[in-house]
Length: 231
Image (cartoon, rainbow, N blue to C red; front, side, top):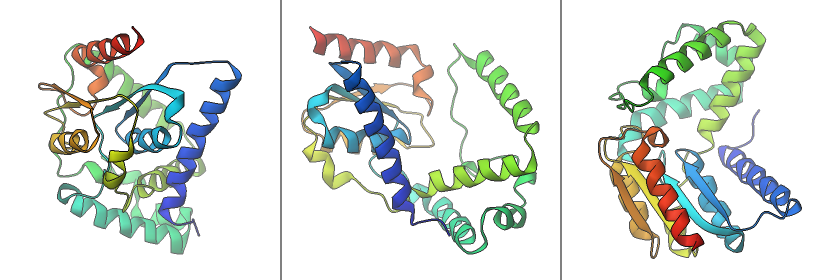
């Protein structure tokens, strides 16, 4: 059976440490780390371990407790059920029992108001989603099982993860940037996170949904933050 969920979060952090080692070998200095969505907790963990390697930290549409809030209660219950099946039955039987091939939308997005897309890239996103669907249709059954198994382990790695009490220990200049129309990681969680990080800047992108990096206003704010710290 797969290890407990927290194991996989630690693996993500280990991957980030590997990137740090590569950066050191290449003599990269004054780097900025962006943690967006599920990458936020990994970026937080990295900044706590290696603050001297960073000039700044950007946390975009993320939270210190991605699953641990009331808005995700039903999804968390379903995620626990699916992960328990994976632990007891293994990837193939879990995939077949859940009839994953018939799912048209991820379970963690059900009953969720769609996030507004950026009008600047709406056409590009539709084309990209069509390409992804076409590529997924080319996968063999075994490949689809491995893909879903990896996705389920990734989601489960954030179960019960709440880093709120650690935020006060962040010593790196931090920008928290969040769209106020985000329905996947609610805006209030971004505000809460900024409040717990000493000296952090909170920038709200009005009307932006979860994929905040699509918004030009977000990119400009991140660039300004980095430029000011590099002066």
